[in-house]
Length: 237
Image (cartoon, one colour):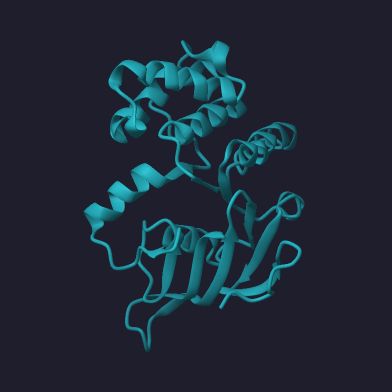
């Protein structure tokens, strides 16, 4: 069963008839436990599509279905609560709180997400588990300024895992890293499917896109190529 299904997504800035069309009739399926790439050049609509899939933005038309239920008609507050429980987000520029240690940054995510169902007494333990999962268990007391770019991104991934969401989304997660560090960070994301996560990442790096289990290529807001897992229908309907 698919975790996320998008049907006929369009996003227009301004009037639907005369505005700027950022996305145009995009349909796709994201299987559970897959490593799914959204690939394309700058300005192709990749980040807009990711925002629509996670309810950060709303489509002008079309539908997003998560785990069998549409999210499009939900209120902003309901969407925020839904994201807190179901989506972990990794950004290109880390966005760690500079005055908090690595461990405290992960604990903060638990505070904002109400602990993912865990009692407060377990939050620091859970944060340590997440840091260990990304190979950062010995760096918990360090501030972001004491970490390399790759280490900061690993902490950001741990933060995204804190509330145990089924979906991890990453917007150009290696775009701010050198090639060697980028490869090691991508290995961490790749490994998350073994821990029950579905990972969707945006990239303009063809090599990284080809490491996915499934992918779509965007150009000017439309899907121009797709690679489905074996046995899947080519077009989402």
